Image (cartoon, rainbow, N blue to C red; front, side, top):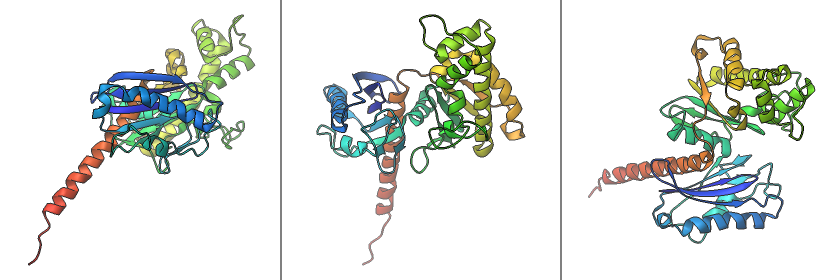
Length: 329
């Protein structure tokens, strides 16, 4: 059994997850995103309190934390864009000091997109795939990598952050400091903005969202179709670049924008044929994510499970080395 936390701008969720990746118990509290760092940590503690009351808590082998980013896994800190009070906040140290946490359990931190990647690789659409890119296309665009059958997080835990690959040298400035980033062209916000600029008129009483644009696209609205085509082209360019760099075999896309189905995936596959032209990147499998609401929790548990497995292997190796030492008399 593994404990998991999934921390975002609207909710803080916790779960106990079994060895098969099934959520056994779930606890959730709203995120007091505009409150102080202490109040925010109090909400995290409240979720842990709920999990600690469950019988399975006494048998957990690890605890994983998925958090909105940026994150720094080396330092154990988080600086979520949508949680202003947490800047370089020592989340791992705070969770480690939780009174009811079992001795020897070391919290494992991952970014939310990396958690989604871990979940999809464990029991989702990237299961049994050794080289994959998993993406979240929603209000922003994030991603994570599976290389050689293992989650690849990079030095700081942000490897695979495809949303800030530049695909337009003369594109608009991005809040990250770059220019022409995928996120500025393919996020749900960007799709809605492009559709409005192209003449799409949102239905009376509805907000201009990617979901509303997708609904219009299914009815053949040219501006809506054009906005999704533009987003798909940006995604295709970034996916092809990633595939060329690290030679992936599959791409899994989750998040709200992926709910548009073929409105997104049909032009994406068409554009990918134009960008992924080298022999070793042709024929990439591209499809929707299999996990939804609990992907962050399952991914956090997967990261904890992998860490526990590495620790156990290291202990076994150390034991064998010690047993092989001969004392000279």
